[in-house]
Length: 100
Image (cartoon, rainbow, N blue to C red):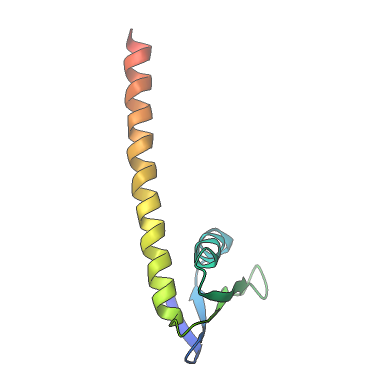
């Protein structure tokens, strides 16, 4: 994965994510939009076969867009860790139940 900053301003950030698609971008966009200091967050894939996604974020209230992205990434990591923990518990319960 390679990220290229296309535009950076006080409350705006536009960047390209090389080699990614809807899976990562949808998750990142959704998580960023949960932040009340986000005015707008969206991504676009100009052509699905040849283009890399371009993500755009605009904040309000003096919030730096890069801080919002970092917070969203941390939130995604926490959700991932929680999911892994619960999934492992479910597998263990299933294994115990099926061995009885």
